[in-house]
Image (tube, rainbow over all chains, first blue to last red):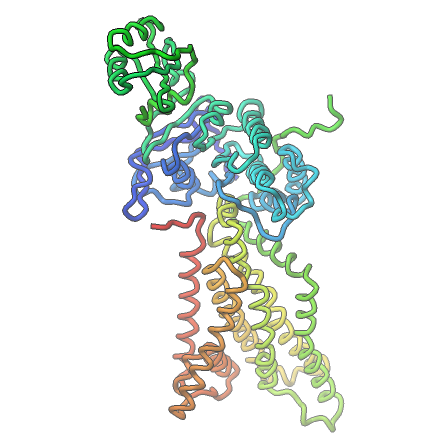
Length: 314
Length: 279
């Protein structure tokens, strides 16, 4: 069996000018992206093309243009070798009907090429790991939404993949379950040496679990790179609420080199680049424009700022 | 340090090369069905005609008074025809949910994210039906042939009817493959096994009913190609070197069967995908 090894620094996934068209809808438009080893977030609003990208990488969807490689192998030429080394956790509820959890996960292991005995042993191990150890003899169809999310992760892990594709892994989970799932994802990406691509529209999920991010918007890559770098160079972020002509004041701040993103009706986040001053510069601008500053609080740059900037939100 | 580490561990064992997953799918499907008592009962019941025929072979071979029951080539043709009923019931019972249940549970994306091709998935599902259908057609028919030799204590019957072994094999294969492919194709069209079962029964009876109506109107059996079961009977008659029972030329019936197999394959190719693209 092929065990092609990619250098430790090589990206795990590369897309080169990939276009996917569904009828008249261009789901991916000339996408060029690189996913580094480790945990990478695939971020974007619903309909941005995240799931289409994952399904293209799995070979479910054939791109109309472009080239894709996963773990150094061409998706068009080696789909089976690639799938032998990746695990996929789909977004929608998915299981094999009529099986209990341990049979289901072991079956998935066998499908991935594990001998029956090893598959069963791995099934028990990964079910304990994802927190379903006590419920492993229950029929999957009786599971709650949160448990179904966990078993989808277990079936993706059973054959010990080098790379995981996780499509909205916290969908439908309660807060406690969501935290536990994020802990698992973070552990896999940071402590267990499993590279992963976490597709999500939830910024906190990506920020907590990933080091890098690819931001998608309307079928295109809006931003990509390490999250810390994307948060921007040295500078300060302020949360600000003003009374007056909001639109005009935003234009004034922008003309002075500040990035402004509205987060609520009258609340905005203002990024003041290094060298452009501090809160005094905001007060001065407000004074000149005649706007009343009702609230100003120092903040830190978040992935939300990166996302808002990338997709052009105001 | 914990007594037993329940954290995630990497797998250091061996993995099989891609290409054998269809056997895993087939074996899982067979095990699932065999666990059902109703189905086991059905399988056992499907062997009653075999027992009756075996008794017939024994009596005719051992009692001169029962020479009337001596087997001919047609005996084996009749046996396969009797098994048509069980083929039909098992096809509906086993086959209706083979792909439909996977579609209902979104299992296709799980299957196809593993190192297996769509053709392997289809082969695995086909194998489940194939195994059970050959268990009630080819296997008992060949066993009967063997019993005939054993009871008679000579190869005279076999030598006289050398064509029987290939005829039984080919006829059973046509019967089994037609049922398996058409049912699997129907199963891929819906998320409901119940609906698929009704559809299969409906198509089978509807085509026969149409033929019956046309026969009543025209008085000719030349339109028997409309009926799926009539086409099968026609071709199997020819395989057993018997006079075809309908006026439709047998190559036409064969073409209809081949057409159904091609159509079913095409449906499966379109419907078994990891993602359903709605444009």
